[in-house]
Amino acid sequence: MSDRELFYGFTLQSVDDKGRVAIPADLRVVLDRNTPVQDLPVRTVLVGRDAALNCLLCYDVTWARQLNDDFNHLRRLAAEQGRAFDEKAERRANRVEIANYDPSGRFVLPAFERQRAGIGKWAFFAGDGDRFQIWAPETLLAADIDDPDLQDRCRFYMAQKKVTL
Image (cartoon, rainbow, N blue to C red; front, side):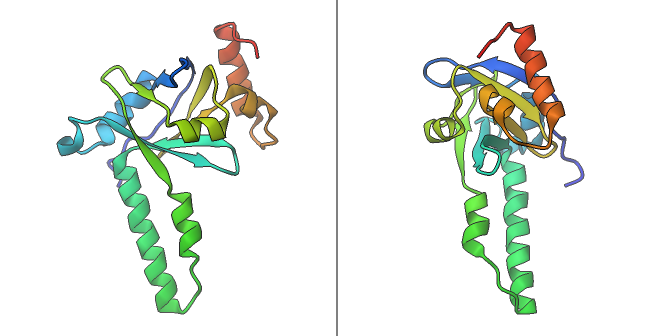
């Protein structure tokens, strides 16, 4: 998968009452470039949740296929070595919903995921290599995580847009 482009960048986006938000252009370009040509007529982003961080994790179909291949490889390896493999736990980590986005990047955040991540009127997008995160700013700023830089970036983008919580 060396030809994959990676997700980089940070942005604060408004979310409307129906849960619609726009994927920032720099992230959307990567989604499109990582999507096989035959799949491009329908633009999709896969949206899951990182329960430990309480943010959404988003990625393209190609990365989902890679994760599935990796999962199957690890399962086979464990069987060959006679080791236990917690398939249910691994599968739970790959639970995602499919969301279609339009050419401008607008899509509806899946309601269950949005509610569980606490995303309201604002969503903070953070590129994270093979995927990107979407945070409720108040959740990120209150989180006990070892990433003060990410929290500082969120504060910076909030200040730029004059957003107060």
